[in-house]
Image 1 (cartoon, rainbow, N blue to C red):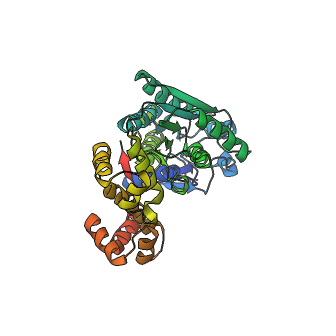
Image 2 (image 1 turned 120 degrees about the horizontal axis):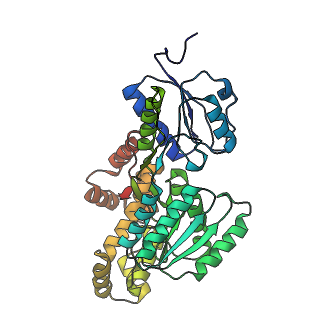
Length: 400
């Protein structure tokens, strides 16, 4: 029988859920380490976070484990194997294992600075009390904004981030939103809560981001893209976490010891429409921006905007440039082309159909305007965007 010490290729169990964007990035980081320093024989199953501990682990003849531990049962089983193991999820179930994960203090600070840069001085948190890492990231955000002398209003969730009664949850959120001062920047403990909050804003007729800007955490891409409007979120550096965890496990499998924590900062905030704006104190400009966000893709023209606001073109142009450094036409085009980009990346609609759906009356003008902005044709942009989905880390805008 081959013993662990004499095996040339170590056997490593990856007890990491495969259902989330972040954990898939973690696994990509592990793969990158193994490609450079392996080979390893890896045991990886399709898992959810709450999947039962694998039955085979109890008597498994392996060499090391990378785990995201969800229950005490799972923690006890890992400890009973006596194998070197590195924890990737929470510090409250370590059982003596070293930990590699995201720096929650840095997460809260990043979100606070994101809002400050956009002129927010009133804040809220939609918090979750179920895990220490949720509490840490929220508390750091609260302390950062309060140290600047700013108020912060909290709505805590003490149970799971799943919802047993959606309508009751929405009523509670709407009541909270109606009581909050505005404009306000709200940090949600994770993307699930943030999406729930955006739905409540939509139901309550609260403008996002003009009245309420929302940022989540973990950048779960399906949730963020499906939200209305698309959700800004803190992107953790999953690949760096996975790489560092694999490196630490390799160290342990060589018979060395370690019990420390490795905390890595997030990659930044993926800025989407839920916080892609600034506090606007000029009420005329605020109204103009709201109308543009709502109707730019329906063919809104500058003359329509002026008529709706009962303002001259010169007045609106001067005041929007003073606040946004953009003219009304520039802002209309910016909102239109943001939707054009989304449709080119995410749909198979024809270019002409996209032009019509985003408010361009003439296809020829759309093609010319697109080339002027992007220096490529819409078709070339679509091909490049789809390649980047496969080969790169993403193409949203980031704020560090």
